[in-house]
Length: 312
Image (tube, rainbow, N blue to C red; front, top):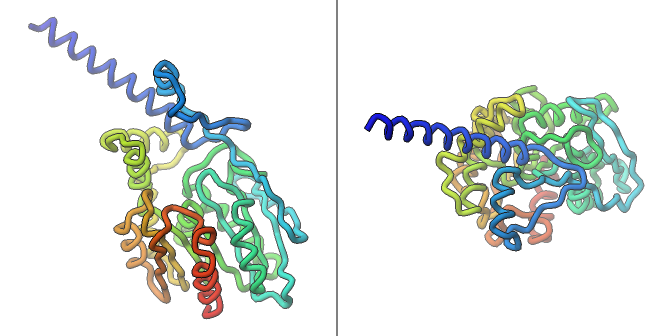
């Protein structure tokens, strides 16, 4: 009986160690990009290949800027936690009404922001499009889903201030929205107004959502992934809580959300919105998910964001 109990104990320990190795590898691949990497379509993989990927993880290809601005632009390098590459584009409608800094989402880059920048440019705003660390032309190969990116938001804001710009606005989608919120809370920066789209409530909740999308029970895997991601990236992911950062936001806010979003829940959205103080507006798009709202709802999105900027 003792021998069976001992063997069972060793088996549980071995399984625990193996599971943690698997999760640690997956956490690293989730938060690090690989140059030239390509995502593998899992539906075409053999069982043996799927088993291999369970231990090796799936490469997270480094986001690459595939389109250049259609207008004259300047490439700007900002010294932050890594060197951050930005595109500065001036509006043709002079004088400028101010500058909008655009921050992209997870696994994206600044070229994905060009369509939204075009709307701002046509309405008299200069734009600064930013590659977060690990993306596009910026340094590093890491992403922390908005945590360390917050200092990059702050440094871009201070860069514009040093060039004499006073009316500074932020636009951020998903991870970009989260980074904006954390930057305002951590560094007490004061943009004139911000537009944030589909920010998640907590890092844990967004990892839970990804497990649900893969039809994998989130407990205990979400917690384990977040733990190892924290160890590997040098920050405590359980403390990454945009819902708490919202309490420090006092500037005017336009918050936007797609009602079919499978990554951010209505509960997270409502909690963030309710914690924001001061002037605020919540707009939802009934037929959009975790998407580019401009692409799906061009007229409504343009009217909402330009109307908000006009009022602030």
